[in-house]
Length: 315
Image 1 (cartoon, rainbow, N blue to C red):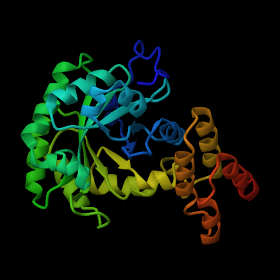
Image 2 (cartoon, rainbow, N blue to C red):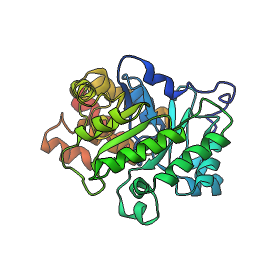
Image 3 (tube, rainbow, N blue to C red):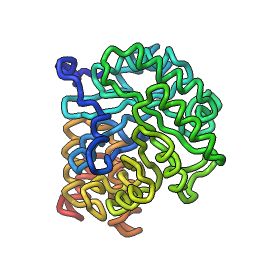
């Protein structure tokens, strides 16, 4: 764990669960491999994002290796409320990982939705939606072993084609004490098909804990539409925020102020070039021509990127 984290033990992060008791849907930045790291979380928090998740971390590696803990998990004073997402298949390993991060984060989330083949073949991700007993046991074990009583334990799932199976999973998780459930409204095998918002609504009506809707949310208008359609207590965005980190603040496309903020934050955090550049490629996607993209996407140094942005955008 990176000790940007000093002093944090004294000042435990705000309990993320409390966010769900306001009148507005909670606006959440999804766990994104490689992308939802500390610098990007810092950026979206400036633009009305209420809650951020870390990228998915493999709990077993995290528990085994100090090197993994230092490289995978970085936070600081301003980085809250924060949820750390783990991929796990054993309750005790998950609880051990949760104990490591509990001084620095408000909660953990169990990834029960990753559809990638490698994750499923290892017993992680979306295959857990077929193991409600294991998911319930994970939730209970973390609650029993983390000393902070307000530490949240949430799960992020995909749906079954038979929605009654998903409702059963969610009710069992609720009985086990899960804090909230994020529902990506697609089946495990679906990638870019339309999101089943009707299924999210059914789940919301079947449990009494908060439910977060996830899938294809691209702007602030859609946040309120999906809140109305599903009744969900929060909405989680991934690609929409990559393309426009200021989306939750109501911007239709990435404003230049946000690009400037990203430059400042990246330089301050010493963000690796590939990550710095990739985020900018996403942010400029909607505001640059094909020809400009061809030039920008092959730039290979921070100084080349800074010069390009200065010359073309006055940033």
